[in-house]
Image (cartoon, rainbow, N blue to C red):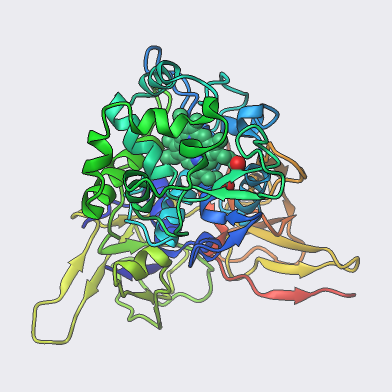
Length: 486
Ligand code: HEM
């Protein structure tokens, strides 16, 4: 088990723990730090645009659509044109962070939060729990040739007032620009590869100030084609009152945080999001990977000190917040017959103050069952004789060889080369492990799984009773790597 030192987290809560980990310790941020260029625009601009286009299917009147990853099925529409859409989805696929309770829609939302932060913008609180659609939604992304009334109606349907429409467009159009190849009727000069909306790469209110100073180069304001001056029609729709208010960069940032957060949390009715995360929890217990050897801790309990302390390596979000934290690892050796029913932690700062007891709000961290689990000490990563990298999973079952065991693995990395990128979910029956004879009342079962699988569920039938262990996070395991060239 690990505890990362840092509000109260009630364990277990897999979606919330995973969302926190992706926000504060995920690796997706490496693609947006310092607002890096790609396809003549920036990666963060592409990630923010895809989030808006995915959300644009929302209809407040009947509660359908929203940020649900339906964009994966909508890329053949002119409104969703652009290499940036494919590249963004490919980024999200390649990082393999989708999980059984954290899909492509959550990843798109996380991407938008990271994108804004990566370009020096404000921190947007993040929630997870979106549900991925399995088909396209309606074609309701606004297009520049549409008139003001159409845009006002489109934003109303998406859940935004006319004033909010002005602000949200300004918040979006502070990043990136319009590509000539994709919008030749907007950018009419073929020499002009991309027309940026403002003169700064960063997430800032230059898009507002340049518009009000009449120095703007925003082609959706001053472009040669009057029909496609949609930003001009929107920005000036209330006599510039809203744009004037956004001249304060504080107001701009605060408004954008509120509206982009709402945009990202616009989901079909019936979808419940996690609480929003704007700071890490004080203490998070991350996983429990038993490997049974020896028996020193009796059923009455025992105390072990941490055997390893590591500094938490924070993402850009944690770094911006100036966070520091430590992860304490423990190795408790538990009597396999008597076992334990729960565990808890005591944190002593050794500064004369009373130790802090971290006991999951009083209940302790209850071990629901310990009769079926992935054996961390017996499982390994293998290079097969044909040089295929696989993970050999060994499941320990408190029972005899008449038990049956199956696992369902979740592999976030799709085989597809173009969207939709959907996870590969496979159920496999395990075989008795010939290399690990029964020990201490446990029988061992095994199978090889993809080495990019990140989560699995176990179901076992032991003497007529069904036992299960769900959401085993394989990223928290530390199986040895064995080169099996024999
Ligand atoms: C009436 C509403 C809107 C219209 C007509 C519109 C239109 C456009 C067009 C034509 C482009 C150029 C795309 C390309 O060449 O790849 C663009 C880019 C962009 N839009 Fe919008 N947009 C609207 C609202 C929004 C909103 C609400 C957001 C987000 C909050 C947003 C975020 C972006 C971003 C970040 C880009 C730059 C993409 C890049 O550089 O790759 N847009 N928009």
